[in-house]
Image (cartoon, protein in one colour):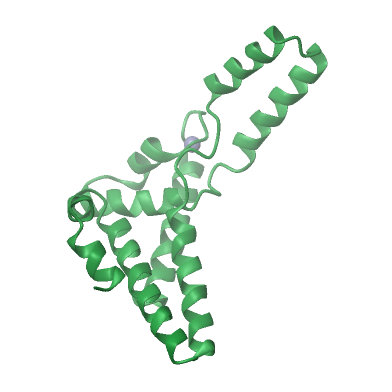
Length: 167
Ligand SMILES: [Zn+2]
């Protein structure tokens, strides 16, 4: 049995198709490439193996992790905990500022959001990009057209990438 066949027959995978159709597609595309990559190795076709490995990495980079950035309340809680633990105040403040900058500075670096956005577009076609931004944007301010545009651009980039890879 190939990895792709195994995945297609796994009950959790079948269940996930209805909820996260694009995510399922990406996973299956990765599995197919892993099967192909293994076959290339047995033929010592390293050139094609490297191409497949790169495509697998590209696809995987969009899956990402969901909880990359701390929320505002997590930041406050960790600040209080650090002060209670006896950190010098200056250090606790600096650390808090750093965490805040982190979450403000890279709200859309997480490619996983683009995948979630396209899955929402697919499963809830009536949602506007603004509604999707309200659901997914991690900026924690009042979401505005900038949030919407950022998430829309990322989603379009993912669409392009997948089209180029024939997914
Ligand atoms: Zn936002």
